[in-house]
Length: 449
Ligand code: GLU
Image (cartoon, rainbow, N blue to C red; front, side, top):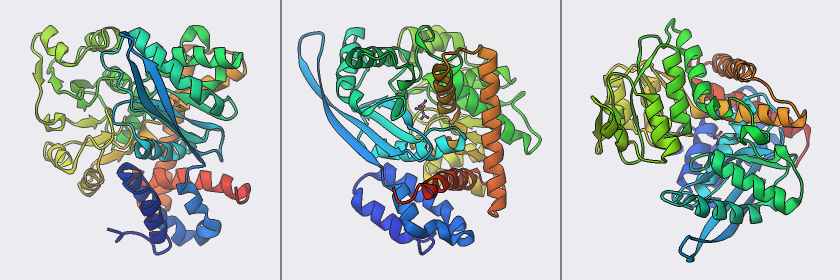
């Protein structure tokens, strides 16, 4: 399976596979980046010097810890916690915390690796990291969530700091969890260090538009990408997988841009509502009641809930996978292509399998990879850090304007890089190379570290 790789890159991948045995998602993420780097090495062989690429593929630090906690019945549980501090060439490690039963070291490592390039693409001073736990928050009470977060932070706090490592949310970690984590950090350290976490509540140092930023940003990216072929969202049918924070604000911005979202999902199934998904209802179900998307069909006339099958079978012009990794397979891509999809924008991290990405590219479908398209969340986290550092607080409009500008900038730099390296329209290549070059330049300047 090493056919597409440059001869200098092949042994690097072989080594990554060997020393990270069984970590399939990490292998997948590294392989995709190395495939793109062949063209960089051909043009600038010196980027392969001093084991620079090997160093980029090896996390700077990996922390694994025990999280004991007590449930409401007095029973003791343990979970496993992770923080992979991947790369700090451009700034403190920055990236979310994921609470989901699927979490393991390989998943956190792939996310940290992707985050490094994503953060570089934003042009902001943030390195890459990711953390999480195999804790399942489903059906846990507020008290249980709080005690779990406190136990998690009781170990993690010693590895954090506004100049060291700045976590945020991800799947299973939203405003409520960030509040508990911040409270415990403040208590243990006796420091009101606002810039140590992002995604905070507005009353204690959060940024306006941070909640909306990943979804809004992804739509800004796709809007810019559509403009390259003279199209836009207006009058288009869109399908958005997921119904968490990213999906909700992706749907909101698509609607603001004149599109209609006709389907969304959760891990149990999906809903179709030809009248357009009612966002207030989704927000009520997911954000307030913390319920399931099946409830939507029970509450909305004309909507259908489908428990089996794939949401990607629903015909649409624009698809925005915003749930989780590898949720969109080669078969799903074939269905979307057959139904005439024009553009795909990844709101989640690596939601399309390599087969799906290849199918979209071969069919000439515009394809925006997550590390570029979903960078608006972390970019707005960097804006939150900026506001914290200057003890300032900007309006929603000002913050969103900056977000839009950042997303357009990321789009343009991916497009220009793809063109420069002889693959116009290939945003995967453009994102990987543009992100790599920024990290590589900083690492080179700092010597062998
Ligand atoms: N978890 C988000 C991501 O995948 C946000 C990270 C952050 O804001 O630090 O980029």
